[in-house]
Length: 297
Image 1: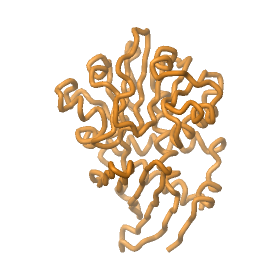
Image 2: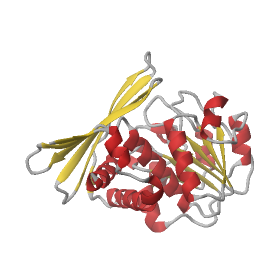
Image 3: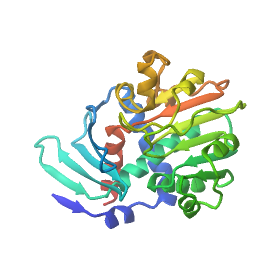
Image 4: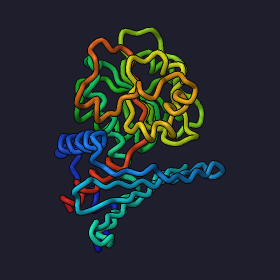
């Protein structure tokens, strides 16, 4: 059994060099998941509201693989943390421990956002990121590498945090939403951030932060206005995130949801003007990320 620390894990990956390979690896994981090739149980979650922290336990096994993975990841006001455990399928013996402190979870979540951006049926001109934490920072880094000609704007309640990530920070979420045709949310907010969107030719809202029963970023009304609602997992969408509340309220029928793995094969209709993606993170992503890192280590 081998143990790898955060420095070793980060040194095994060059974002600039490996980004396209990482994106393709994650795309394959989403498509294989939607094709039924992954065994992924519902996440186990601990929510510590008084401590303003949470811990998610996710796992996955890709059929035919010699390994399976269990990921423990938490977030709090002190930052992110986490560990991935890799086991042999044949013996269930622990093969490796990736002490990534949540880095791989942040990276694969940001990559999921990039995958959606590649799918929208228009060329994004202005991209907005709401949030000032590790996920916002990671997403900004990926956007600057892959879309160097696009304007990237930020908004965070603490403007200094936004300016520490990028040079252009809006004064309000509403200001950012009005200026951008693609908006990412990357927060752990318990209150709505995006209430309405102004009339616009095109608008894509990509929710990456609302991944449990308490967090909330996107107004339910927006789901009724969307031309397509994309989730990473229909099973998890019924329980976690803003889309689960839209389902329970009858605003969106469950059979109208599209999994990202299916959308990667079918594409998005060219006439879609309002797109919402709401992700809670699936074990297949973690398996693919662990396999990528272990191949380098």
